[in-house]
Image (cartoon, rainbow, N blue to C red; front, top):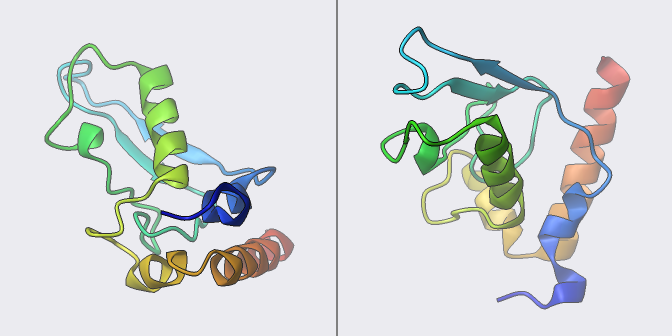
Length: 115
């Protein structure tokens, strides 16, 4: 476990991301489709912005609302599942907090310039 001062999750502080939430006709009994519109370098987010999060897949419940989804994504940013990554490069780099933070900030800054 990483120490608090070397926490790679702190790298996401002050960064802003846009998300897309699409609600199917069966909502709330069917999960919405949620993805990042702003590219997000993270072990559980792929290049298309798809998010690997159990509550958006097989663990969905009609009791979940948008707040629950957003809080779960926020938690995922801080505590990724590196055992089941969509982005293997980010999962490997997560083990080195300084390198992860540097790469995240560089890619975020580059993407911000492009938009």
